[in-house]
Length: 74
Image (cartoon, rainbow, N blue to C red; front, side, top):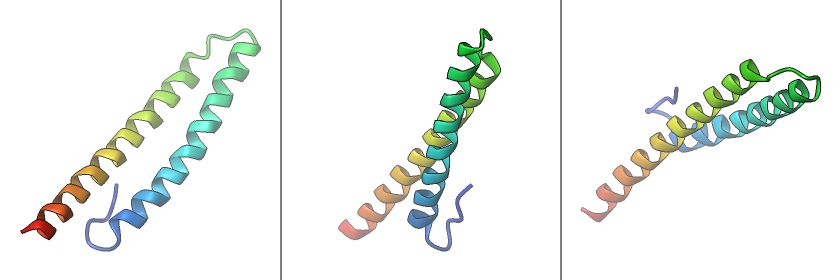
């Protein structure tokens, strides 16, 4: 998902920005489905997929920053 060699923080920030837009769009899709009398389950599934992707990005960032901090403290 994120290229470890170049600028991982910048890439992660860009991905988070993209995922934020996708999350907002998916949230609106769930609300629209419910307003139209649909269950919104497929839209909710996509919302959950996006949330899982955001969690992966956050985990990568955390691991990357912990590694940088550890090397700085050595």
